[in-house]
Image 1 (cartoon, rainbow, N blue to C red):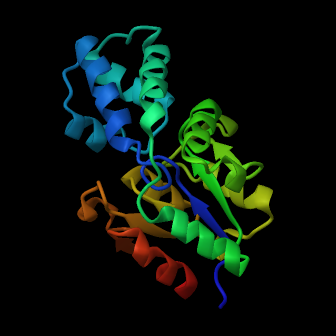
Image 2: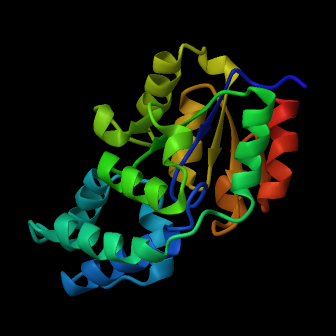
Length: 215
């Protein structure tokens, strides 16, 4: 069975079930800094973006700088929570099928390399992605700019038109569209309407292989 030249996976919320934990911590820290946030509001405003873009947006809303150590405290709490991190249900089987059929895949995330390494190691996915991991730290402009996905495709030696992206955030879908790549929006935690510009939207990982192979 044929498929795309490259499948690019987002990490948080697509490979590892970390979005609720991460955005809950972010909401707490922003609230402590004087910018009240709920989990749902943090998901709405920041899910899929880098910490750099989060700080820029939050400081503009707050009208003053966030604490200089906010990112350090965020990652400290996050990594403590990662001890209990699990893969997104069904994604291990998706990777097994891609491996069996010789479909190349990689990871492109707004998270730092340290965060990606910690998450993948915890859930046992590091060996599957080692050497094929791309972070917003690697490019000048993170999602929703296309830079990260284009960098991943170029490094992997695949044309953008031959790539498909698996994303769970509006920022990630926008980045994939800007890179002229097909993108499948995973709506497990995201309002499907916010992923409506994706090539297709799905709610369960069992539906992903059919979308990938149809591409």
